[in-house]
Length: 131
Image 1 (spheres, helix red, strand yellow):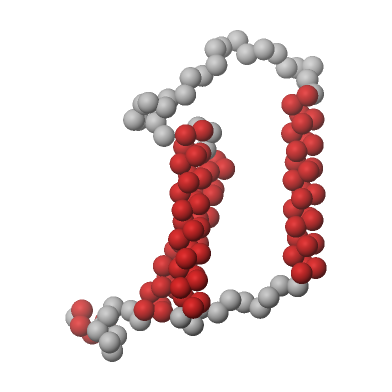
Image 2 (cartoon, rainbow, N blue to C red; image 1 turned 30 degrees about the vertical axis):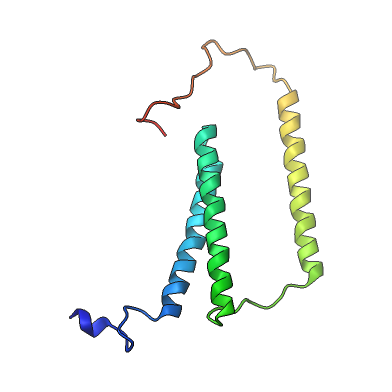
């Protein structure tokens, strides 16, 4: 039964198909690590997911380069510089708006705000039961 699923060269999948699958998994993993990074509140966990994201992006880039050099992957058409500049400008404006919003909220005091009546929660850094 297993021998029927082998390709003509005796491997499970053709090398190009296998590498494309790995490349897709690396992209998916990088997205999931990025989500985990943004959702984590513990600085140590956030740093760990940031490191994992960076390592995954590096590996994905290396695999893409090898595949491209071996004509196994062709990049899409090139973007126009003006379109890229427009996207960068839009992202910068959004970032500025977010920073202004956060700054306003941090400096604004609500008539309903009050000091907390419980001590600050201590992080569970050393506890193996919490991440």
